[in-house]
Length: 99
Image 1 (cartoon, rainbow, N blue to C red):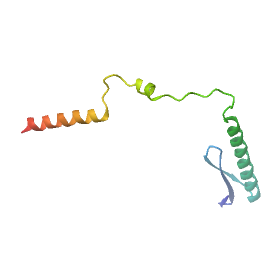
Image 2: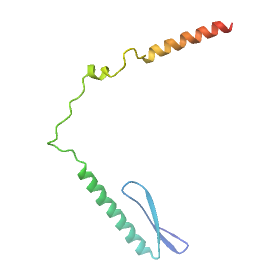
Image 3: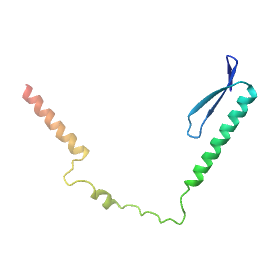
Image 4: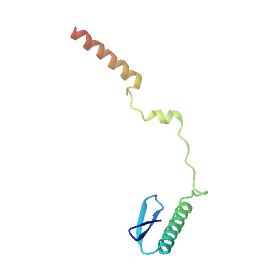
């Protein structure tokens, strides 16, 4: 809370972390307003956390094996090393042609 030009400013952060300020006429009013907003944010945060807990009875997903992970790559797709070799060959060829 801060005082500026005869007004008392209640500043607080909401449950998503965004800062807000509101000008009020008295110090006590500003303190009370700030406490109420922070309490509301805590309640919303707790409600969201309890709602997002994983369900213990839900079936678990099986981890992918290495062979199925590689299957998604295109046949003949270049790896990082093959690209660098190809680029170095073209660089050498262009240097020779410039001489």
